[in-house]
Every structure is written in structure tokens, then in C-alpha cells.
Image (cartoon, rainbow, N blue to C red; front, side, top):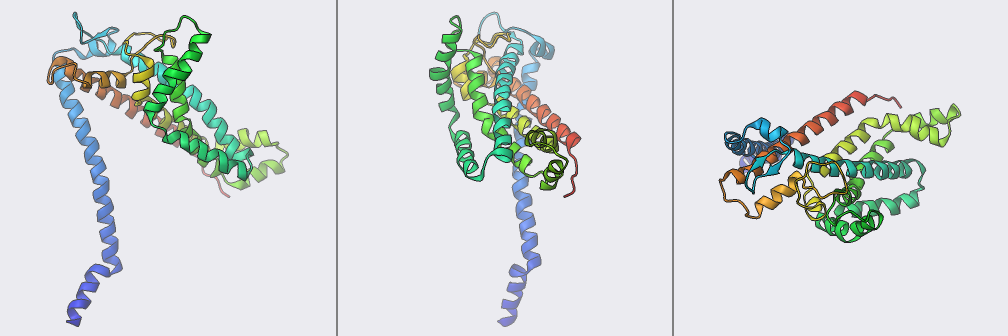
Length: 306
């Protein structure tokens, strides 16, 4: 009996067995994520191939008119791409200005007691549902814009972009602050020893040293903005127009997917398969942006010795 218990303890409680079990468990969990991503990609490609068998891919990528639900049908996706990009650009400008400013303030200027108050407030913004942001844009931001620009209509890209920028500001701020704080204190001390001022230390020493992390935060924020659905669906409108005027109503790629997913097109039809072609293009755009972000991060990554 003692030999059996000893064998049981050796098999299940030895450090080597526990280590192998942990490795295989983590490997299995990581494989689930990879399998899910591959499954999504295969589904998008399969349905998109069916769509491109009927619609030439160049007509899809270069066309400037998007009317798949009306006669005559046109499948040029550029109006959806333009709507997505204009909202994303506005959001990125807002997020970069406020996110980086708050990150530099919290890491370099703010006392500890103020940092403990401001940082949780920023984290609360990240937890607000996006549908709330959408109605906030429609009921609060849009009337302000209409007072400034009387000719603007209630659904416009500017309102959606501004609120989306507020939404991704906590992401940019938090990751950038972590990158700034991780810069060795010895670099700051060396700059102060050479007579540099606080402003010079913050923007000429600390900021360049943390540039890879800051770039990563901006790329993640942009990827989040490109894939956002509810804000653009509620506030930007549903007019696929090839324009870069932020005061006009536009339709983003995600908003179109939501619109058609509500049952306006029969399953398996050409109109229904546009969901997957637009989704595949959105996937490629996000993937290229992440690859570019990783390249930028590696390019500006530097090793600092404490």
C-alpha cells in the first residue's frame, strides 16, 4: 500500500510532473486562441471567394459606389473604407493629444496623491459600454457641433470620431504611462545632472526612450477604433458616401456589417456575402496596422543600462 501511495505521489505531485502539466495546459489554452483565429480567417476567405466569383475583386477594391441592396447594384467598397478612415483619423488625433498628455503628466509631473485619483477615472472611461458612448455622441456632442456648424446634419463623422477618441484615450494613456515609468531613473538623473529642465527631461530624454511602447499604445488604439461598431452605427449614420468631409454622414465598415446582419439580405445571397468580403478587408487592414506597429516598435526599441 505504501508503495502504491509513493508511486501516486511521484506521478502527480513531483515538481517535474507539475511543470509538464502546466506547460501542456498553457499550450492547450494558447492553441484554442490560434485555432479560433484560423477558423475565423478560413470562414472569411471561403465566403469571400464565393463573393469574388461574381464580383471582380478590382471592382470591389477600387469602386466608389456602394449600393448592394439597391438596383442597379454597385460593390465598390471605397465609401465604407473612407468612412472608417475618417472616423479613425479623428479619433486618433483626439486620443494622441489627450492620451499622451495625460500619460506624460501622470508619469513625470503629477504627485502620487493626484495620480491615484486621475488614473482610476481614466480606467472608468475604458469600462463604459460603447453603446453609451454612441448615444452620448448623438445627444451631447452632435448638438454642440450643430451650434458651431449650422449646416451639419445630426449624423456625422466628426461627432463619432470625437467620442471614439475619448473612448480609446484610456488605452493610449495607460500603456504610454507604463512605458514612460519603465524608463530607468538613471537617465532622468543624468539629464538633471547636465542641467536639463523638467520639460527637457520629459520630452527629450524620457519620451524618446519610451517611444516603442508609446507607438504600440497608439497602434492598439487605432486598431480598436477601426473595429469599433456601436459608436459609428449610432452617431455616424448609414450613408455609404465616398467623402472625407467630417461634417457629412458616412457609413463605416463595421456599421455596414451590423446593418446587413439584421436580416436585410437572404442567407447565401450575393448581398449577404458582402458581409464576409468587407470583414476580410477589415481583418487585413487591422493585421497590416499591427504588423506596422510591431515594426515601428522594434525599430525604435533601444537598450538602456541602469
